[in-house]
Structure formats: structure tokens, C-alpha cells
Image 1: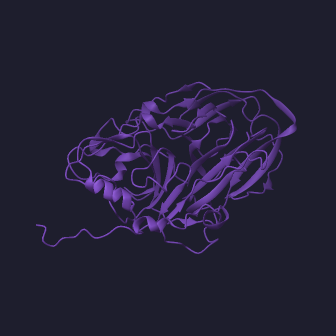
Image 2: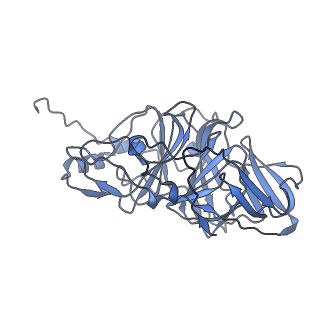
Length: 399
């Protein structure tokens, strides 16, 4: 399970992503793929009518292993998304809930990359490149085509951002310069680990292909890579290593200063998806309403909470739950947060101590699945009420 830090390439050299894997037997030694029931995995964005409302979900339920054994693949549930894997353009957001390790089976995604955010329970992920232990407050990225198997240690839950066609990269830092936000040295990649294991009863290799699942049988472990070299790898990152940049005078900077990774579109400055976090930090802005301001914007904002209390919604937004604010739908702090922040004494204060909230932000207009709106039974029908107590404080005589 040893990890190493990747050496950042000098800017003058661009090496296209690729890796050489030295195997005991080639991957091609398998029986034909057969369709596999995909459960709640989908890329059909027309299951239900569009819903522009502010949406919030209570924590997604993890079944008990005694009632329903679910491993990582069975536990994938698509919540929302847009675009199309065949056209290699789009994204999907999935919730995973599982209670059992994958046994003699692995998954690879032919459609795109998975950014995995564990929220409860750690994941021991075996990949063709080696092993990664990924705990809550860490993230990992498994890129297109990389086979992996997930071991869990009890009831486990988390979020996945899937991008079709683009890869995640560090955002351009512009005036920030060479250091800041997520630094390349803090990303860890596995070192080679292999098993030379025959499985006469059959090892199942599952491919997510054009949004569907397919399974092929083979009689040996696919984790038979004795050595590899290259720069196309799975990797993990601890969110505590993020160097937060913030306003130290007045007003708010754009939330893009909290971007960990981005998947760029062909339009400069417009992302298919950004992975953004709201970590513990100091708030010092003067003459400023410090929580996030009320706004509408041209992005779709999906939020999740790994731990703690999110500053703008301390009550209804819980770890393991989620919210979706679609493009041009207004949102912002609830009434309690507004009252508290409006009366607060403006002195330096720790914000979000013990908390980690994150956002999957996209320029695509995302549709919600039937599982998200109905089957999951976790949609909070009263979400809109958190803004109802807001009242006017306008005084025309205040100059």
C-alpha cells in the first residue's frame, strides 16, 4: 500500500498521459463480455421531467449487510448528470453506499474518469498500479480504463463525480503564481503491487461501457502488474493539504479560489466540472457579510458534506446528504445564518472548524434521476422553507 509523490513535469515538456504495464498475462485473456444488470446506474436524463427547484437530500441510507449485501459496484446510484458517454462529453454524479468488499471482481470505466469522495468508512482500493487506502477527507481519482477493486470495512458511503471525455487537472493559478491551492507534491500515486493468482472458479471483470455494465470471466487476477512506468495513473490527495487562499481586506473572492481539480471544456475558462472544497480557514473580511452571498449563476452547483456543519446551512444540510442548485436558480444562506452573520462582531474568526463541505460545479445543466427525486426517498420536501423567514431590512432613510 505504499504511495509515492509524482514528480511534476517541467513546464517545457508535455508528455501525453500514458503508462506501460508489465504483466504476467495480458488483459486480453478473457471470455466475451455479457450484459450485467446495472441497478440504479444510468445516463438516461429523461426519466423524469426537469426540476429547476433548489433540491436537498437527507443523508443517503446505507443498507445493513444482514438485509442487503452491496459491494461498491452494486451500490452505485446515479443522482444527476448531463451529456452522453458515446459522444465523450458530459458528467454524472453518483452516490455509493456499500457494506461488503468486492470479491474476485473488479470494475473499470470505459466512459470516463471517477473522482471518488468517501464520506463514511475507508476504501482500500486495489488498482493495476498498486493499492490506495482512501479515508474520509481524502479523495482519489481512477482514470478511464483503470481496473480497480474496492475493499470496505463496514457501512460505507460517498460521492462520485464522473467526467466523460476530459481528465481532471490542477486549475491554472494565474496571478497566484507557482504555489497555492492543491500543490502537485501532495498528490500520491501507488507503487506496483501484484498477485500471481489463478481463480479457476472465475474472476469477473466488469466494464462500464456506454453507460451500461458488462461482465467478462477470466481465470486469473487482473492485478498481475509486476512493474509499471508512466504518468497515466490513479492518484489520491488529502484535503487537509489544500492551501486556502482568501480575501484579507473586504468582500468575497469567487469560489473558484477553492478549486482542487478541474476538468476543462474546450471553451477557455469554462469547466465541464470543478471539484471545489470549503475547508477550515480564517475569516477576516471587513464591512462584509461573511457567509456566501445570495446569488444565481450560470453553473450547476452540487454540494456534499463529508463532516461537520456547513456554515450557510447548519441544521438541514447533513454529512452524507447533498444539495443541488441548478443554473440560474437563486440560493444562499438560510434565515438563521443570515440573522447570526448580520449581528456578528467583525473580528478574525475560524470558519468551518472540523468541517469539510465540497462542491461539484459544472457548466452543464444537470438533470436529476428518478432515483434521486423519488426512489431514494431522501429528498427534503421542506427545503424551500429555510428561506421563508427572511424579511426586508431596507430603510430608505439610511444614508
